[in-house]
Length: 198
Image 1 (cartoon, rainbow, N blue to C red):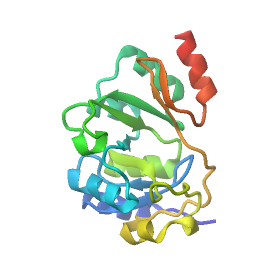
Image 2 (image 1 turned 60 degrees about the vertical axis):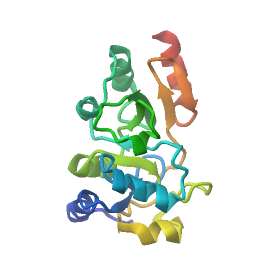
Image 3 (image 1 turned 90 degrees about the vertical axis):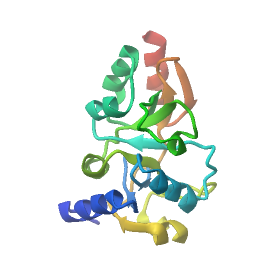
């Protein structure tokens, strides 16, 4: 079983701080991290994935307190986050001015993740906020093991944190304020039930 140590997480955090890309495990699939507030670093994520710049990228933070540093969640959104985060749910919130347009594709709202995975949380805590997008070339399948990484992703990543095989699936993307699910994934039925009852 691969192990990720404090030392490798520190090395990954330094790479992110230096504008480089890092592959990291989450409770769904492997993600591709860059400094989410660094326009050039986020641009490198789009380039590595071959992703259209009109398709926004979410960011990961270690806790709800960090969410409030970068966004303006309403009381309802905070209730929702307390119910579902950390976990495989992306919450779309109003971003503060420091959130770059390249990340949000020019939208005022940004997707926020608090991953339920100790390696992802440790990286987000030490280097955050980091980009939260799957470590795959756009249009190809998500990656659950580092052996499955596309060469284009592996070659652009300064550090690959191998946490073993991840469970798979994808996060549910939700606008809790307006009661809208943009993408159904893990916990989608539970999210539906919460939105209907609040």
